[in-house]
Length: 282
View 1 (cartoon, helix red, strand yellow):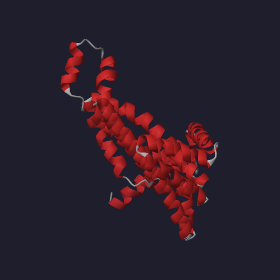
View 2 (cartoon, one colour):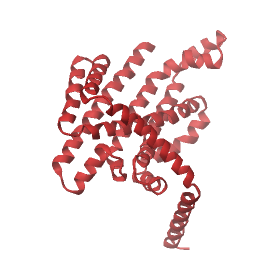
View 3 (tube, helix red, strand yellow):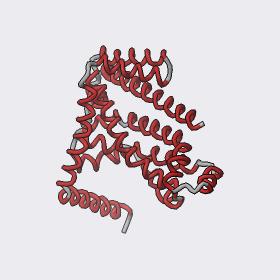
View 4 (cartoon, one colour):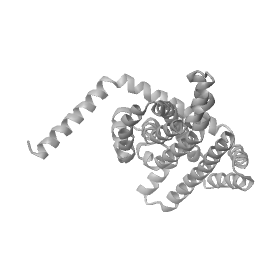
């Protein structure tokens, strides 16, 4: 069998398998879509409930406490800029998408990372899979998700969760393994149970690395925003994608500015939270 014949057989098998999964698992994927869109709609509703200046003020206060006064003021002004450009609903939609996807990714990634930190064999087993996820083009995740979940926020969430999970797993596992042996031996000498040793010794040492994983998961999620606009995710990604299709340069630049604002604000706040975690541990 030559290579072209093998490729044709493989492509036919892949298409048939995807069609079979779609036909026989329709009820399951409908349920998954409803759950994902329900989570997204709930967070979006909370973000859109107060006026824009309330959100800007809250972010400014968080930025002040987490970083410094000037950053807090700059964050509030930057969010006001998003409102002045007429992109506030899209900005909140993007933030809701990123927060929802990151929360799901952390709920998956942190427990797996903790297990991988304790069991070296598990860490070696999942490492190639994480490498594969981080090297494949994001479109690879979007196409099957479209086939199974259709267009909309659910498909964007699935693709975003996939790219946001690896940093959480890697850095959580690293943090668990970084616990100094002398502290573990001290806990054993004191007769601590494994659960108590985890909560009192391993977790405090791992917290800075876990916080760094949260930061990186958020950044990966923001990186998927524009790509997710292709599948009708809404928000700034869809705005930029639509502007590119119509060559509306001004709108695409405005959308890019809003994404940069969100990314920088969230990045600085989570980085400061990681440093605070390091300080408390010390």
